[in-house]
Length: 109
Image 1 (cartoon, rainbow, N blue to C red):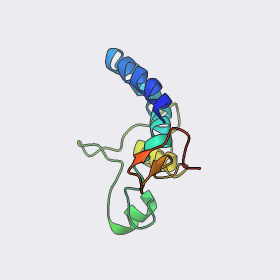
Image 2: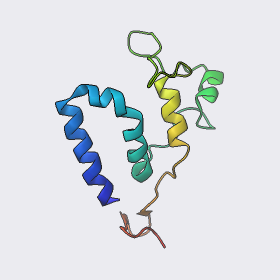
Image 3: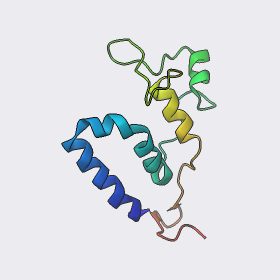
């Protein structure tokens, strides 16, 4: 988990220096972050945007009220929907030992 920290830090420096890098690689970078610290589902009981729609949440809209643009040429789904799909592939706490209260570099077992 801490090895990813070097990669994530380097990406953060690049994003700060070159915002177009952040626009282009936002989803892959979020996948790397989710692999070590998955924020988990944000919508409804099942954790999907579909559940949010059923419950009346709009998810995926920007502050101006328009649906956010697509990434890398895909026109289906909002960025938030794509993030939810990414988050669904990773565990909530991959390295966390809840009993000891910290993460292990070697994993749990």
